[in-house]
Length: 307
Image 1 (cartoon, helix red, strand yellow):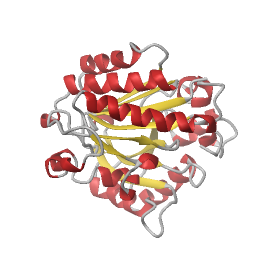
Image 2 (cartoon, helix red, strand yellow; image 1 turned 90 degrees about the vertical axis):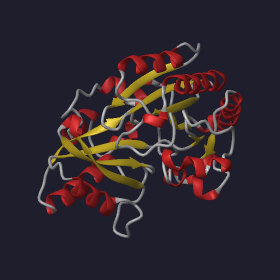
Image 3 (cartoon, helix red, strand yellow; image 1 turned 120 degrees about the horizontal axis):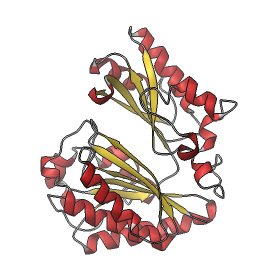
């Protein structure tokens, strides 16, 4: 059984040759299976989703971190996604209750490995050493540009201006899900994001959201993380965003899933095909169900509500 999943977010989404070399740094590790690569030009970001057992995953993340340090110079980086480093955020997810301890060990071993090659950052989510760093937004506060004033507080490793910092930790399964809006008015999607996020008294539980322009898709997006799939499903989020967007005089043009989703996320629908149609998941690029549902890629893994 694979045991662990990593959803590594890297601050490079525009140079195919660099992305290919980053991919190779993962695939060269025996025992690791790379499930998906999702690059965004406007975000200037690539998400690598891969699975494996503890030892292989530790080796793969350290290998990826080393490649990021060699290939990405954050001093010239810009994009519409918040970021603090070349390997910006590196979450590990236990794919079964039995893998929880392995995930904890892997996080600590990865931190040691990254520190040994001169890279550093903070633990976040369930691995946070500082309570407020359970929230990734707090880790990223001030973004890359604010790091020089904060680097002395790293939990591990040392500051390198070229690399920046990494947020590393164990977290539950979540869904990265963006909803496309016909309007290119950034103020509109930012207002929608404000209304729907959990921190708003009338927002959706388990939802974090920001709004940004997305010229590559000729739209703007309400970019969301559903951090608790038990409290909110993609359909509930899509319906609420549609309601808010309509109230502001615009309309939706489908949505986008980043990486893979557990089958449980689409429990509101009779089958996944119905979800793809309803949510417009293939409105801007093709959506291959057999490749994008975690349960189908790893049949032995249960993505039931406990995750």
